[in-house]
Image 1 (cartoon, rainbow, N blue to C red):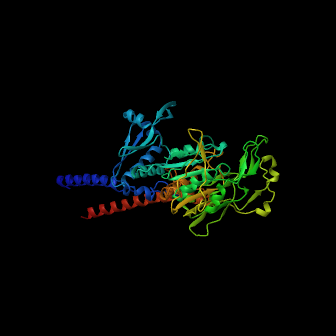
Image 2 (image 1 turned 30 degrees about the horizontal axis):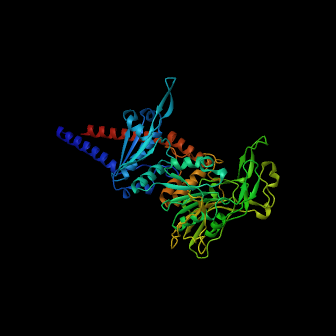
Image 3 (image 1 turned 135 degrees about the horizontal axis):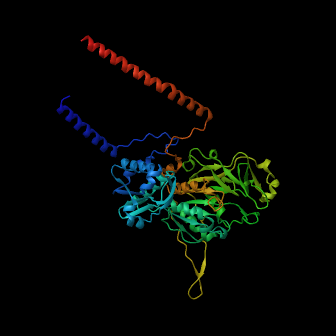
Length: 530
């Protein structure tokens, strides 16, 4: 090869490398071998470019110390780069060292986390940043500290969509029972909504519900919500508002564990009119949680706290696809009573196990009375519906009925009637989710349960972000291959690995060496022959 040819080949090689680098910014390929494709962007994430008019800027503030010690930030960067590659240049990603941008770190409210590392047998402590800022026009969404991939795609995609559409992720909450106030009894759920980008609007019983509110959660209230309060909820549904009802028919005193039927003021009747009736009983199940009761020396199984397992959900509904199970506390059974008009469709979301039964009339709920739990179990044994979804145009609970009236005192101490807004002329399509447990998102649950994931997906589905729900349905994984749990497959893989490394690979190397030696000897013979 002449010097001119060598120079030409070198230039062409450099050109090809640069061309491939440019292509890599536009075309993206990752081999994802995890069981649920945890590292493959969902279609909604890959197609965000169709919803974005202006460029989105994603800045990942990452401490170099954390990047050098942990593989997780590299996986986060890979995901962000895939967003950039799939977006047709509408998403721009920058990785920044927070030490060089202290003012931006402070302005966006990014916070550090302590990190301990072992270096030359010396334990060192430092603080590191790993926060993401998403900017669109003059608005920004901040993920103060990210470390796991579990919900990262959901967090990024939902926030980009919210910024691009100009619609805030908002929901209202009515938690009217005194012992179940929102900030105290549902504090864990409130924090989960906040971390998922939702702005939560607590509403008092009887307060007018904003027409623009996308989703409403009603947790309890069958004994507190009067006709005046129910009118606002019914009107909200008639306007197309979507509601999650966490309700129950039995009241349980958390201190004495004494149970009684609730005196419904109309909420349960209104839900029944929409298509779901709560049974006047409690569901008990052999699939249950254990409780540590002060009167007993050890944890005991407690059938009134039902553990809903992964295989007890609908296979088709997006809200419970890849269902992770939930825990329910003194739950009531549900029955479909759909309107005869056919305008409402209902679907079971999840059920108890087949080994469940009902407790009615007298409620013996103390663990010390566990011998009484099984009374009537033979007559009522079987699978019970615990959660259901309704969709369609719902009949108004107040159709043909005079508006409820409420009076208040005016400035001159005279009673003044509070005017209720009119119902819409025709109902709009809506969605409703009903769970027979007001404590599903309460302080009784643990952070590790599937309740929070289900409630967050319910908020997304009610808000008609069905494709966003699909992201939560996929299980995340680490950057490694999924662990094989089947023993037979595990033995097979181990044996194959041994054969591959001990026999096949050395044999291929030997064959390659022998082949090269034979070719070299033939070439020498040919050269000598010449």
